[in-house]
Length: 348
Image (cartoon, rainbow, N blue to C red; front, side, top):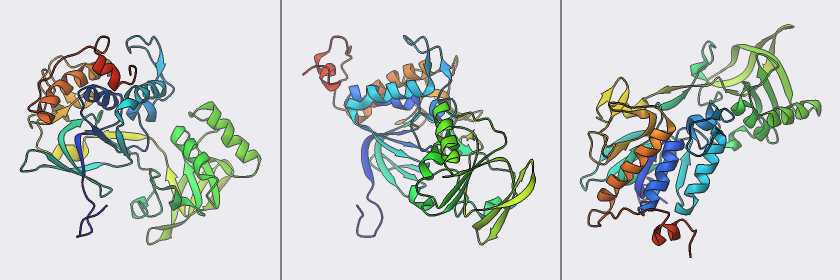
């Protein structure tokens, strides 16, 4: 939908949550119990934040009532828990701009051209924006966003292309399996013949190699070749020496670093690159902007997922007074409240 000027019509919501990791997802639950609707924006192309991106199979031992749970399992359970509240997700996007409107609400813009208007903003961005690690290849900047990409936002951009994927983790393997059916040719390259990704994905990849449907190289990229940002080939070094791989799309998955990013320019009080909040509402110095999880700091702060869950609960109570200023917040327990149980779909 667009207005008469051709600009996208802003999406209006009660709450915009920046970050779809465990704390952002649990915030949906706590806000949902108070009838606050949420949209979530995350720079990653999948849900779960660090849990899904950095350690999907790594066991976590300090989640209450779950003696052991992997990062991906925790994400899946949280998604099941918040399903009754119908949150809307916007993945592969970064929030670039935020400003307060005359009526007290917030206007938020993403790097993908999407706009939101929200009554409250919840920053649950972990350590900040995930920024892909750039391979040490001379001149790679000229190819970025044209033929070298660090994430797949639209699969069709790789249809009928000669694709080279570099990496050995879940992202590299997942996109190898997803893009192989539509690419003209696909090569996966890793510096060693040992992969960190899910064993099932590794076996699927090796099966495609055995069937001649893709190539696997053990080596490293050393140079890019092309003009005007359009890649034509990559020089790779293997145990047999150097040779050129013909490709016009390169996807390097070398991991991620975390930076505060545009959040640093929003006028929030910062301490050592973290957002300072109170411990009553977990609100920042800007009324209506909250920060929960690893992105915030306060005396006694512990960077634990369970601490972020606690912060989400208190934040939601304060947020309700902004979203519904004329409504008295009545604290209720899910174990005994019929109205809460109906919201959760466990009682007719």
